[in-house]
Length: 170
Image (cartoon, rainbow, N blue to C red; front, side, top):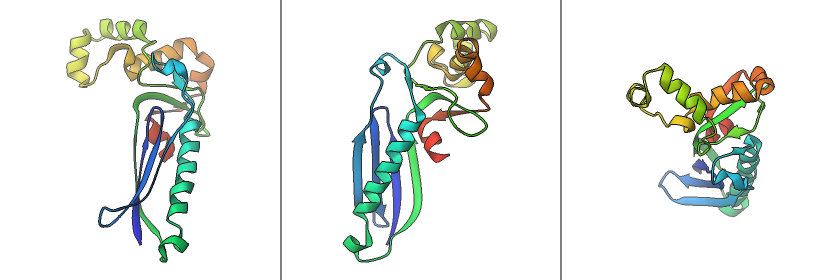
């Protein structure tokens, strides 16, 4: 039996499902994970929380698909990932986080956003040019904030990811 695994790495938890070629759900799980209470107003999350939840969810779903229960071999045809985006996830040469991820709802970089707007023709221009300008919630101002406030962590950063699902995919 071939299945497609689909996972949503959300703000407060993971949802994982296995679907067969006919669109039938063969196995599924939903599991919350610890969330920093400050996330309601922005904040950070540790990317390994997402990875650990995905691995645990995978074990759960694959356990539900065990050959003893289904009586045939299982082949994973594809894995689809989605999740929270507009996070600033900083990685070093070893692909490990150099800092907690600054999540999409964090607007600590308002000052940096204003500097971008002044430098590049205002918020309306940036919105037209980029199609997705959210001021202090945007990635560029968050990266500037890290550069200015977490200098050591920024110096160790060699890669930036923008979504929880991107970290899990690595």
